[in-house]
Image (cartoon, rainbow, N blue to C red; front, side, top):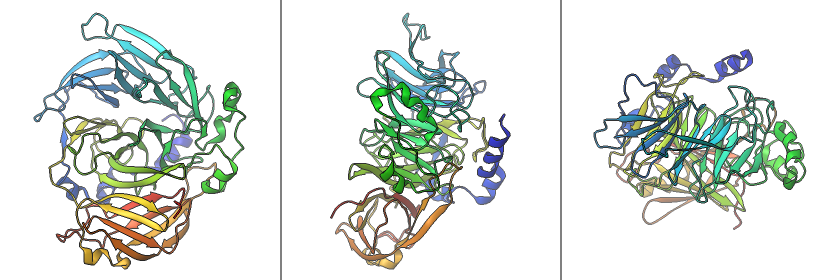
Length: 493
């Protein structure tokens, strides 16, 4: 790392591998997780330094990998029952491929300075034609990361651009999001991005991106890419003069405020849809995908799975729209991955492949690079499946029936709530804390849903659920006892 200030910040914020071993994992649940979701190393050729930056699936069932070293690799055998990988280099000479998709016989690669359409026209399995679709933005520093989506249903690529050195605006349109059409038209979507880690649709088909903790971002988060929206960091406002169709630049947010207060002042401000409380639920969240396997990966079909670079773990998230605003919850899933995760990908067979690298910053995983596959054992864990907000509280859905006598005991639901300072400084402590008092519980006849009524629900706060007292009908504890719901809006009765 070339910049001393950044080095100091990351040393303060990143857990060393030795400390990680002492702490015993992110949540201390790897042994329990292993029963339901074992992790298998996929054997890569020993001469290949596979620093994964992105994944996509090909129509013939192969896995395509975009790498930090500027390659596109085609992998056969990754989804075989007994995997034995065969790797073919399709393209090289690119620059950190942090977005990869395939459509109509062509790859679409988002690299640092452009989105490129890449084709094999002579059928020899190697790239022949490289067409620049868009290079609208500037690039001048290694830390100006560019993340791209797979093609959306209309063939568009969505791009999110990190700031210069993750703090500054030193090149054109850093901190902006664009939609790149199949014919190369570059459409501005949103401003205010700081340091993204991936872009993709949520479970409802809306485009979202993940954001790391930093200035104007109290914690890591999943955010909705609302067209015309402002995502929170005002340093990119200068570029509004290049896009008169978006209207005037937004009002400057007030530092030291709260985001639920500022969204009433700054009409373009899009609040975090899901906050991932720092270190409790990730530290540098990265690529995400929705489970579209139809239940082949277990009981979480249709949910978002999110990787984390620093803590080498995978989490879940669910989102819902309330009063026109996206919000939702995050949940622990699987710790103990081998390296810093940058990308994940589901396969039609029901596997979840994960990859990344430790190059750049310390990570909890002990490997420099690795390709891993999570497999569902076929056993259904007792977990919090999802949390939804209600006018006076929350509905908690579980994966297996709970003990109805235990589940009706309101004292067993431990809720606390907090928010973050919305300011120009790095991150934020949890502030404005309070207790979420449960005054009533109604359970569904099937033993899968507990409807909690609270004394009150506070807008703009994250609710932390501690359900360590809840047991299944078979007497088993939850694999993960905590979850976190971000309340941007409260539904009408």
